Image (cartoon, rainbow, N blue to C red; front, side, top):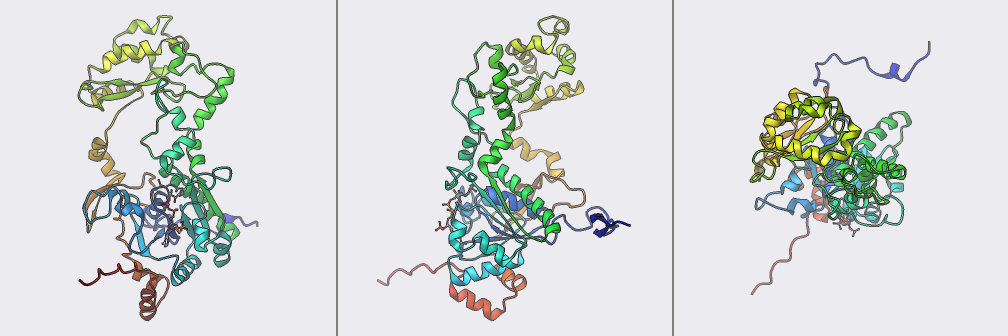
Length: 446
Ligand code: CAO
């Protein structure tokens, strides 16, 4: 009889769904991340059950704790919404004792995640070689702005990545400048890529017994999300991009994928159209897709049944040069309905469409609360706030969203119960300055 890898696995659990622990139970993450990209990644791992220990500089912490502060004396929403379900320990990595504690953490963690500027971790003494020597099973995962190449030493923020990864050159209107998008595809998008790399590395480690380096460069992550634009770049060699409205307007194409306004990215033309109330409500709009299989239904709904058979409109190819005129006609209809009324009517006919929802509407949307995508949590300093829960739903690993930790809230707990330091040793550590901010000099006596 031959044995397979599956023979090594335990039999299926008889616990009820959601009662067999969390997907990443038992995985301990040394979270050396800050700002947005890295924290997005480690928050997802925490949502999935990993024990995420966030290392922060004593007295200061993640810089976002104090950025865009809305409540005096409380951690900002920037921080709280990216650091739920984590524990916080303060360690000064430039203090000798601090580095010793960090190295002890390296030995007992499964994954180290960091997104410092290139070289910062090496300067702390935590090179890949050192980390691998301390713990050969350690997976060391990094977000950097760029991969190896001419820009590898550059510091990068969200919009820089959007520009360098191809998003900005392909976003906006043809006649306008490049635009960045509100979706944080550089930061949160790269955090997502990194999280996938980490779980793949954890899975491979089950077989090989060793860790590896995982790198997600923000430029690469953005380009991956702009894959269809690189597709269009190659199609340009073979003629104009007929689904872009500039084709119908007779505007010639250049040698690079142009900005496409609100054109649909796929082969089904779409546009954003005004709805009732657009004069005063900036979000009274709907995205409308003229999907070919429901063309007849579209003609009936907007009141031009003759377009079903008219040679200028009956086929997708005939419609391509007339998209502007077609959407203008559809808009005459959408302007008579609110975006939600239009949505109701169009969905009855399976016509793909989507209301432009504001953040206010999303925050109030009951179904998002019910699925745990939008969650209200309580915080000792700022009170209740909304955050985004796990957007990835696992049927056997439910997510309970917890508030973000206060700066250093778990320092003692981690030193004693995770690292096994005695009370006496913790006092010595405290005296060494490794976990506390240096005292501010007192003003001289008058
Ligand atoms: N104890 C002591 N020092 C610490 C510390 C700790 N616990 N935590 C961090 N530091 C130090 C680092 O060692 C580094 O010091 P040196 O430069 O002297 O070696 C310093 O803090 C700052 O690190 P940084 O250069 O990463 O921070 P920055 O604010 O100047 O730059 C950012 C921020 C995001 C531009 C940069 O980290 C970066 O390019 N990261 C990679 C790309 C990325 O993730 N960008 C997305 C950010 S989200 O918009």
